Image: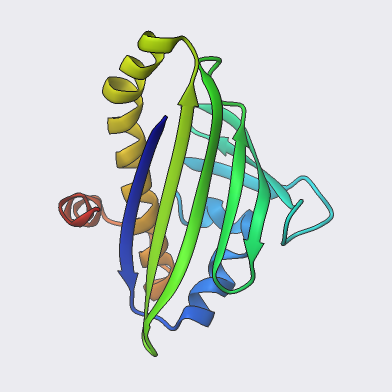
Amino acid sequence: MLQITRTIDIDAPIDDVWKKLAKLDDVENFVDSVTKSYYNTEQQEGVGAARTCEVEGFGTLVEEIVDWKDGETFTYTVEGMPKMVKHAQSEWRLESKNHLQTTVTITSSIDTRYGVLGRFMEKFALEPKLGAALSGALAQFKRHVERSQPVAPRDIEQLHTHAV
């Protein structure tokens, strides 16, 4: 199984960061590859809430919350991945660094099919692409929270050098 973790510090109190992150359908406003996002359940937070994301160059993904700790973390499964992917999920976790900063960590896990071939694909195809996507999403979320602006490409490159 492939597991990738990325972390970033955001200059905002944890409550402010959580308010932006917990608005699940807002992802289209801070991840540039998500062209459209919307709830596909009446429930908008907590276990069972789900959103659909239209991802440029990829297609449609459905993300359902499977774990939720208000103000701290949520985990969602991802449906709509290529057939080689058996299971995919991501967790966003917030931790108060101090009263003015929050550490945000995202961990994504992908389990593939096809044995050795699947593990080869994890290492050489999925890992670099997913790692870059997670770093980009965090940089874009940081900019969204701190300045409500789109992320600059050089910010993403700087994040790659500081990624866990």
